[in-house]
Length: 451
Image (cartoon, rainbow, N blue to C red):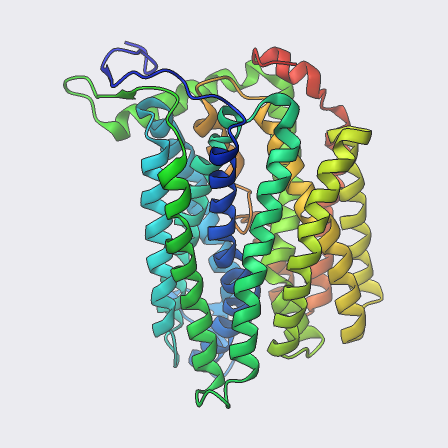
């Protein structure tokens, strides 16, 4: 029996309409909910804070030894980012296959959203020299974050028409930046006025990270209440196990992927340039703190500015895609990314320059990712959305592993944060080299999607 057999289906209903405003807004709100984790935890607080925790636990030579493995304390966080995504390489496509088979995307979205939210809340207890506790909690939270985004993205081609796809995707990203910015603003007030509130700076950091988990949990309720299932729930056949079905369907998908060469080429290009994007997002605070000596309060202020500039940038690129085409708009963003990385290596010296560079990055940050997501949604076979977005999510926001690994190795071998950040430019250049060869229209035809 094919893993996509409809036998065992229950609860058939007529498909809800696309472009329903209430459902679209509810879908946007999951970006609003989870962006607090990406912004407050991954981008701002956890990198410098966990690095400090690891340094406190380091030996006289600056190394920690988790599970007997010798690791440079300053590289510990970047290695945790890499490990969390390496785990996703194995888990996310299988979870996507299970979601497509069972038609339980919304339930799986809720499960992993709350698993990640509770792990994030538990970061409140990270202090002293307990760097392993921080590493484990981050692994659980980031793996859950990536899994939930698989199911979230898989709703995009179901709830929006092709004509509105770029705009809908861009508005989701924009609302995410706005939500992440609002919570970060509140955390900034707490962090900068910790003494006035009668708490230590480290305590303020722990409260801020835990607040991201609370925010994530509360606002996830909105999409869970209003997103609709388009296909009837399926039951397992006698003797079947969901994990077995997931692996079988994943193998089927991987065998068939070469039949869609344009989709495959886009996916490779995206995995490369998005590795660069995610490395910058995850490690920019550590670079600013360790290389330029910028304090945590200034870094929080910069990321806050980036959030609100990126809100406008995501909407801007949604508009530009309608004027110049989706592929050209993405290519423009990648050129800007490459030039910015080169500037950081060769010319960046002061805090003011760091702020200006952050503003430039903010303009292209959401646009390059939102347009990539909407473009990919037109290149995947119907009824396999979660599986393909499982492959896609391997290198989605805050979940790259090659980039942080390269950065960490470059840092460990040279001791230079500038060499580390320069190593990231290769991912943008590789994406720029491959993306022009992707025919977006042909890709849609190959998978039987609307052109």
